[in-house]
Length: 108
Image (cartoon, rainbow, N blue to C red; front, side):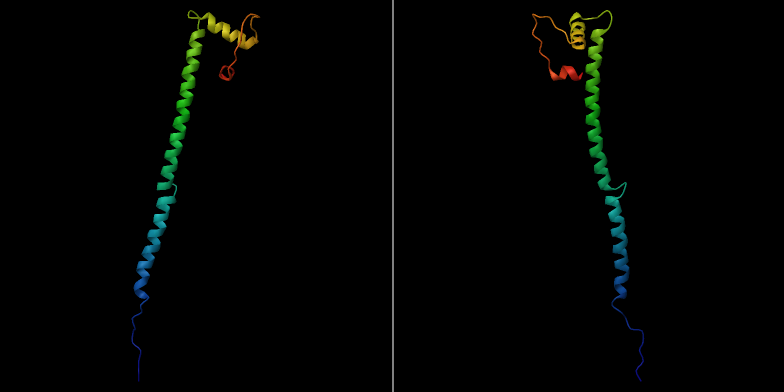
């Protein structure tokens, strides 16, 4: 009579490595795509560079505005600056003058 003893299966030796691969791939995916992953780091760096460029633009505009305001302060009042602002606000010029309006003058 033949009796079957415990027979070795080939599938048993693949269970632990396959579970290890699944666990490592799960954590690897989230290390790259997760909220604090590598891809998010690159996105945050790109956004920081964009925001820094915006900040530099705004700072340069602020410096320009402060310079223009400084020209209008009492004691250092420049007649040309006052004349330019009055003509722009009132839309007036003399009949013997040639007026050249640039688009950047109207946006400030």
